[in-house]
Image (cartoon, rainbow, N blue to C red; front, top):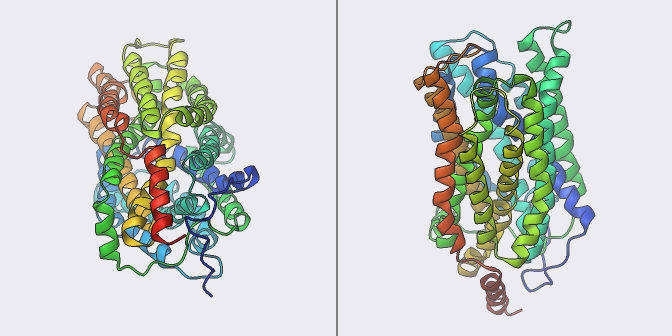
Length: 462
């Protein structure tokens, strides 16, 4: 059964109700929980709990991205654009993908300990690939759904702001409560390894509940023409690569995402080994993430005064400054980590607002040329490149730690400590600052987007 087409760009862009925004953001609570847990702790689980060589783990994660992900992300984007069902184009993937995703999460943190060589490589690659494939099949259609709910430049930022508030709330749970759960399950209920497996089971249940809340709660008529695409996949993807603003956006987004992956993954190593503050790790992460939550909506207000590109640039500049100052902290516990985490959270909050709110604006550029909406194509490309960036970041972490002589669970040499500081502080700051000129001059603004919507209306005779 084919759903009725939406009203198209000529219909009023419409103010989305706050309740609808929160229902849409519910799934991102689960995705944020996943992203924080995997980003902050998966490499640590591999090296310090499962006792796997860091270079082996990092390489396995990276190779999986260069092979299967090059196919699966664009494939799910194309499929969701062409889907016909009584639930629309996107919701079937949320409805039927949630439970497998929960199971894959549990499996990710349940691999045997003490693996080495080819066996360790294959098990890490296989479980990570399974998790990542199922996650892609759910999160990519979910993100594409946001571009269908409204065509308004500012309203999209408001929708994504609430979506990211729920995401960062999940982040906070993942960064702080996960270690508490591991501690709860440790001891009488089993050892460290078993505790992580049980924690991942609880995590999987929470993710399923969050995704189903969105899948069964957001059932409104799209604000755009949501008819299935008829364009062949090759033509649709080639057109996306001809979209110059989208290419600029993806280059900046990949660099900023790489920094986010590396910094969040290196926080445990930096806090535990450089500062000697292992007992304060959860509090430090909580300070960072609460600050992110508090500054998400202020960036929405800032983008109302500026455009999205310059507002994002301000956030990246602040993040780079915070990371550079963190490099100067001594090799012992210090109070200064807390104000620097506040400053870092103020900057990184922009990373939770603008990448998601900017991409729908470029989908209309494609629509003006092709006459069709290809949300799935664009989100599929972004999802693939985001995950490739995440795997590259994980691989760089593994290679750097191994190259500087890191030994899991042991006192680190000055050389290893310098490697941790270099990768956590200096390299990310340089990358962030390199992005600034492209964002300050980003071609899609409030004014140009409004003109684009008017052209679409004229072209469609509306």
